[in-house]
Image 1 (cartoon, one colour):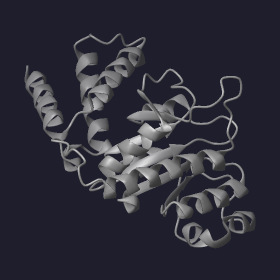
Image 2: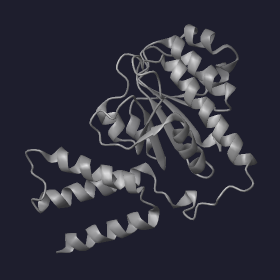
Image 3: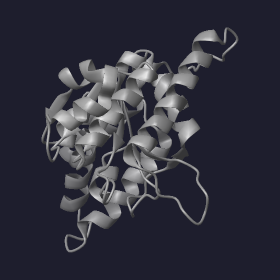
Image 4: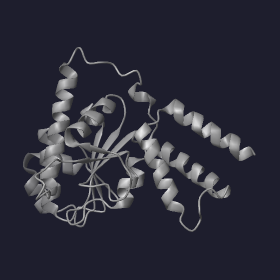
Length: 241
């Protein structure tokens, strides 16, 4: 299941953090690293910091668009100290790990980190189903990127260990294969927005407000594939009229 988890760094600025991320991942059994528009990679400092995890850097993906990378994912969790106005449900680090492991048994999932100076943007978080945070002291919540990655990776490894060894774990009636890929949800949101705009339900002067609220509702509901198919059919029926 760990092989189905993507660790994604969006616009990492410091090469050392890329290497330290690879090392943090490998110590916890994770191997799939994706870099979105890194400031400087490949770089020798990244390989120095990676120590014996340079193989992860050798095969990491370098892309220029987060949306493309998460298209095949049925669960995407961004990391942040707040939702940045994206109306996305929050999970602590342990809950984040449990969600990822539960679905990674048979589907591709992703954990997304923002750049060191500003973290993930509101637009980035809006592409996620949840955002995960690390509980910290109230007066100082700032963690180094690599330290944050290590913390989440540790929780993921622990969640995978307990899941594999808990023979009495309750079986979820909604199987992991029931959840749609992210690209299918994006297509649904686009169709819904077009329909609501055509019917004048959405104010074209402020189109984003209503849709972001509606997306938040669907994210909290965690639509499975059958539910999404029903909603798509509903839109098709309304479009005919």
